[in-house]
Length: 203
Ligand SMILES: [Zn+2]
Image 1 (tube, rainbow, N blue to C red):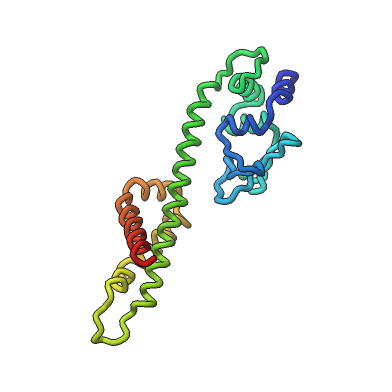
Image 2: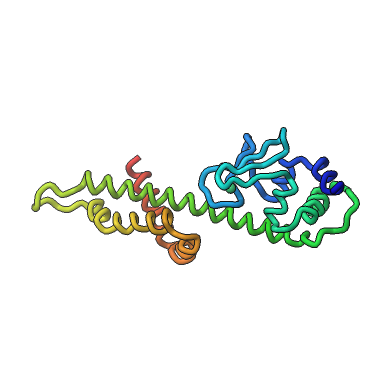
C-alpha cells in the first residue's frame, strides 16, 4: 500500500519509537515493551529502520512497532503515525488516536512501577546483607555476654527479609508486587531509614 510506504519513508523509526513512549539509550536499546525482562534486549537500527528483540524474537519496521504497541492493524498504525508525528499526509484522523494517550499513561505508570521495584529490591538486598553481617560479627561469644542489639535485629529480621526478596521480588507475580507496594509501604520506609541511619553513623 502506497500510503503505508509513504508514512514509512517520512517517519524515522527512532522518532516513532520515542513518540510512542519507548525510551532508547544512546545505543538505541531498551527494555522490551513486548515481554517481561530486566535487561535491555530490544534494539533499533536507525540505519536499517527496523527493530528487533533478542529476548522474545519479535521485530519489524516502524509500522509494525506501532501496530504491536497499540494492538491495531498496519493501515491504522500508519494513519496513527501520520497523525501523531504530523507527517501531513492526507488521511482521516485515525480511530485509534484516543488510544495513544491512554497507552502513554500506561507506559508511564509501568515505568514508575519498575523504578520503584528496582529501588525496593536493592534496598531489601542491602538490608539483608547488613543483617547477615551483624549475625556474623555480633554473635555472642559466651553466655555471660550482653547480646548486641544488632545481633537481635538480625535474628528477628533476616528470614523475613530473605523471604520478601525471594517470594515477592524474585519469584512473585506482578500482583504480588502491587500488593506489596500498596500495603507494605511502612515496612519499606522503616527499612529505608534503618539502612540510612546505620550508614550515616557507621560510614
Ligand atoms: Zn521482547
